[in-house]
Amino acid sequence: MPGGFAGYWMKQWSVYKGSCGQFGEIGIDHSDPESEWAYQSKLLQRLTPLVKREHVLVIHCRGIKDDCGTEAFLLLLHHLKKRISRMQRIHLHCLTGYPYVLERWLEQFPETWFGLTSMVKNFDRYQRDSLDFVKEYRLLLETDAPYYKLEGKP
Ligand SMILES: [Zn+2]
Image 1 (tube, protein in one colour):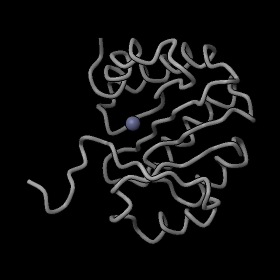
Image 2 (tube, helix red, strand yellow; image 1 turned 90 degrees about the horizontal axis):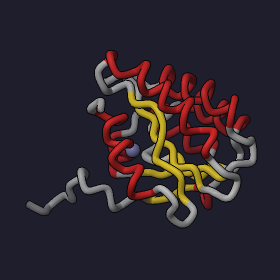
Image 3 (cartoon, rainbow, N blue to C red; image 1 turned 180 degrees about the vertical axis):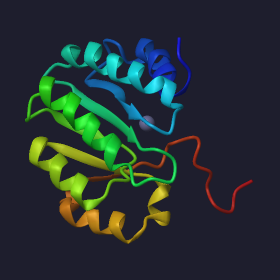
């Protein structure tokens, strides 16, 4: 089993399989070693046909470290638009994308809700601008990620 995001996903599968209405999280993580990228794409090709219309598809997308992530988002869109309905309800968690990405994403998947973590406090000007493309009621605050420490707490 690979490490990184793909390995994490495989471990989560037993938790989410058959549960109420969520599928995932699945996606692309290019902050993982490049040797795992092809496996991530293969995993997406195997898993996306299992997504049902009634699921909320939870998406994870992360670009190369210290990059804006556009390449990862566009690759992910390429995979998803072949197999996922345009009207699929999607939770794109831990949003970090640039305006170009948000425009392309919403053209393809208008039923997307976007999760913001504490990473938002480090957003650059372009990432802040991307929020203009999202209706306020489609923004979700993700406060439960265990790997984000609360400020002022040990
Ligand atoms: Zn994630």
